[in-house]
Structure formats: C-alpha cells, structure tokens
Length: 452
Ligand code: CAO
Image (cartoon, rainbow, N blue to C red):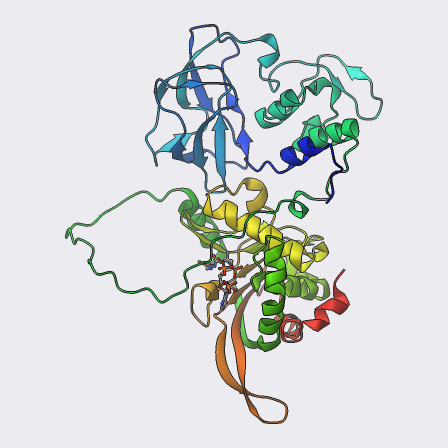
C-alpha cells in the first residue's frame, strides 16, 4: 500500500482512468443561449474521429463535466465532456459517423456561467514561476477540463499549482502532488502499481464451430469507409512495408515456464491479477534488450540517425472489437513480472472497453504479438515504425522432444518469429538476442539473477 490512511481521496483520483479532452466553446454563453459545442484539437495531429457512443440525447439536461459522447480516433478513444450546464438541443452526428475537429458536435442551450467556470485554457489568469515562486500577472493557466475538474472537486485554486507540463501546463500529477503535500499522502511511484482491476474475462480459445445459420447472401458488393483503428492500420502498415524486413524463427521449450506459471497463477489471482505468459515474455525481452539495445531503438524517416531508447516500452498487439491496437507497458526494464501482469490486465480491461487512451497507445519502443493466444504456429510480423523489431509468438503445444539423455519427454513448445529492420540490424544480432530471450524462458530461474 502506497497511500497513508486518510488520503483516500488521492487514491480515488489517481485511479481515474477516463481520458477527457477540452472542447472549443464560445466564451460568451448567456442564459438561454444556444451554444455550438465544437470538437477541439485532440492533439497528435488528429483531424477526425468516429462517434462511437452518445451518452446524451436531444432534450437531456447536462451539467459541466457530464460525459457527452465517446469518440475514437485512429490512435485513441476519448470521452468528450460538457463544458456547460444546459439542455442538449441537437446532436450533429449519428453513431459511427466521422466528426471533424473544429466542427460542431452538439448544440446546448446554456444556463448562466459563473465567472469561476470559464475555460482556463483561454482565460488570462495568475500563475507561478516555478523558480522564483513569484506570480506573473497576465499569463494563461493551461489545464484540460479533466484537470480543472480535479482541482475544483478538491477546492484547489489552479493559480496556486505549479504546472510541470509543456509551457507550464498543469497536469493531473501536479494536482495530485499538490493534494498529497496538503494531506501528507505518499503518492505511488506509478499509477500502475496501485491500480488493481479484476482479471479480464478468459478468452475463448476453442476451435470455432461453424455457425448453424449461414450468413444471408445478398449477391451485392458492399463498400464502406475505413474508420478508426483500421485507418491507422492503413497508414502504419503502408509505412512499415517500406522497411526491409529480416525474418528469423526458432522454437522455445516452455516446459519449465508452464510449470512455474501454474504455481504462480493462483498467487497472482489471490492478489486480483490474471497471470498469463505475456509478462514473462515481456520481461525476458527486456532483459535481452538490455544486452542488445539496437533492437529497442528507432530510426528517423531518412534513416540517417538511430536513437537508442532508454525505456523499454513494450507494445502488445491486442485483438479488440474495434480492431488491432498496440498499447504498451511502460518501463518494463524496471518492472517486476507481477507489475507487468498488473499493467497488462489494466490494458486488456481498457482495450476491451474501447477506452485505451493516447498515453497507453503511444511511445512504444519494441513489440510482441501473441497471435498464439488465438492460434497458429508461425507468423511473419510487420514492424511498427519507428520501432525496429517485433516478435510474434505461436501457440504453445505439447510435443515430443528429446532431453539431454536422449529420452523422449512431453515438451511445451512455442515458436517465435522475429522481424527486424535490416537497414540497421543484422541477422546475427537478432539470432543472439533471440537465443538470450529463449534461454531466459527455457530456464526461468535465470531471470531471477538479472531482475532489478
Ligand atoms: N499459447 C497457448 N496458450 C496461450 C498463449 C499461447 N501463445 N497465449 C496465451 N495463452 C493462454 C493464456 O495463458 C491464458 O490461459 P489461462 O486462461 O490458463 O491463464 C489464455 O490463453 C488467455 O490469455 P489472454 O489472451 O487473455 O492473455 P495473454 O496475456 O496471453 O494475451 C493479448 C494478451 C492481448 C496479447 C491477447 O489477448 C491478444 O489480443 N492476442 C492477439 C494478438 C494479435 O492479434 N496479434 C496479431 C497482430 S497482427 O494483426
């Protein structure tokens, strides 16, 4: 437990996972005026989103910070919240339609605004200079509505908080730190250490039975626009195939790991966490990347410079109802296997709820794709630029193998298929990395020696 008793409020806030965004609004909303509520710049160069869910309908009364709708860009799902108290007069889009940044989303008949409720992003305010602690008059206080709400809920004046974000932007962490100082609470080192979600529902890995009712054949072609994550896939994969891929495959004997996981699974489960093989695969990869940092690197577009990444933010290809997405577990190099499992559970929960945000989906440095959790033995994974390497894992199967005495035993075999950017990584390096990764997994006790 990282939070002292009495600091439950901090705990509650820190566990908040909804990612909210600001909305461009008229500053002069008066009582009874109809305001066009426009979709703001969400960042990351996103210009359009798909409306996935409406939380309101025409005629509904909303308050500030009530959820209006869920939109999905090619990078993340975002909950749009109301900036006004009022009545919804018009929804501009049907479900699954494309909404554009800067264009109206809903009309709201507003109630009067209180002075303190104006959008801080636009309002000149008083902020503090971090170094001199002197007030600088006339500077803007930058914060998203979600942060503003946190501050408001905890009676914190934004002008008293020092923003650590870009251009002094006040981040959620700044509010939490401010609150922690007031309450004497010790904040957890990272939110993932304390977020304990129920384990995700087990996946159905059975062979699909052919459905009894065949689909209705219309005899007509059907054309529909590619949206959301599918659109992202077009962009990334087209860029990826400009990279000359080097492919390398091997088999890994997971007999010992299978036994070890059986022992650890109930312990993790008792702590509320589902322990699959992935945390071991990730940790072994990270230990390998420490020895072969070129696989945890990125190259610029013209392939003139290579950047060796300090963090091992390992992406996990995730099969979701919205399509393929690749959230990443941050800083695997400093995480225990249990911490990786905890974070993976959280990402899976968010992924299946369609709630992964930009924070989870960006910054990856290396990727693993466990297609074997669905089926298959070999794959030909495609690198996710600007990363330079990816591994695909096949299904673990019981197969006969020989031990050192030449006796046949029942082994748990999994195939791995690596792809690496052959412009910067040679085959021998991939082979050495793969050998090391494999040795950690075949002898899981070795991992103990090198765990930080
Ligand atoms: N072989 C055999 N069993 C496997 C396995 C494998 N390779 N991978 C997972 N399993 C088992 C797990 O251990 C778990 O078993 P228990 O119920 O006994 O614990 C069960 O299958 C379900 O695991 P899971 O899928 O919920 O969790 P995971 O951590 O293994 O995988 C994730 C998480 C996100 C990688 C996976 O759910 C997924 O989406 N895989 C598909 C990835 C994909 O689409 N890749 C292609 C990308 S390119 O289009």
